[in-house]
Image (tube, rainbow, N blue to C red):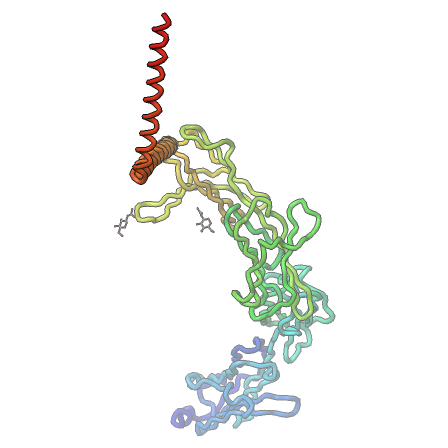
Length: 477
Ligand SMILES: *[C@@H]1O[C@H](CO)[C@@H](O)[C@H](O)[C@H]1NC(C)=O
Ligand SMILES: *[C@@H]1O[C@H](CO)[C@@H](O)[C@H](O)[C@H]1NC(C)=O
């Protein structure tokens, strides 16, 4: 280094002091040019002036010794590689508003000002830094030092402010947002126009409130399937007194949800997720849903429209008969097109979707096996597919016939079985009865004999009497 400066040697030619504006965004790198015009400076010094006071920022001595001012010791320096070309550009890293001001580069031996710059630091700030939805916010564009004449223009997320977003203004630097909403969230860019230069700074404005959905939205749910109505607060928030209400299509006012439609218990999800999951969308569920809650005493809410979708067939699906299916949505104002697709599965279970018709209604002239299985109606909006609703064709000719035969066969079998059981029962009963009787006879043999003898005797007497009667009759004749 020493050698370098000795070589550089003799006189410093001065290019004359110019004053330049350098406009830089806070936090970035500022480069203040200082070109001595000759690769032979004896020593060079950068000072920051503040009225009459001058603070040395950086200095290099003839012997190559380098000094750095205390204030910016770690952030301000001149890159060595450029000294040989006579360039002593001052680099200031991570610029702050306090760095703004006038900087002079001089050759210390000749005391000649080589270059003079005004460093202006632009910064966008918000007060409060993360406002609650609905509260007022002040957006400020600060330039340090503030230029005599300057124009200020604003952009939000890259586009000029809409009248809604612009808010009111009391002075050129500020914008006052009366009621913070998701519309004002995003990158605020302030562009400062000076006479010759322009500079800009950007800062992200966040919001504490309901981050999703940002505004009234439509949620599409197929009848019979589940759907989630989103209600996400800013991460980390714990909203109070949260809940849901709905106003079904045709109803006059919002009502509490039925018990079957309650949001999942908060323990299973983060505090800031208050979304509502409808497990099975029913035909009459379409309407406006409202999620509400409180953040720091401010009542917030979002509304969304649940649009139900279903497939209706105009007539019962019969084999070999024509079939017409209509894809019906409770609200189709956002729908720009429909598409019917057939869903098939190959032997590996891989799902394949084959687009068939770009229409709202699907007409199949003749219902055959190749049409059986799963179909889906997809509905599209400007930004892509909004959703789909599926339909299953299960009826097949031979299958249906088989079913009927099989079921009638079953009935016959059951009847036959019953009959058989009854017959068996009767037989068993008869056998049992007979056995019982035989047992009884064995138990009382004497009684049986007595009965027999008495009855035999009686019969004998009867016969005797009859015979006598007959003989008497004959004698009479
Ligand atoms: C099924 O998987 C096997 C093995 O992974 C593969 O060789 C075959 O091509 C697949 N068949 C189809 C219809 O995708
Ligand atoms: C229908 O929508 C569901 C959920 O978004 C998706 O998983 C499925 O692939 C879609 N089906 C078709 C046929 O597009």
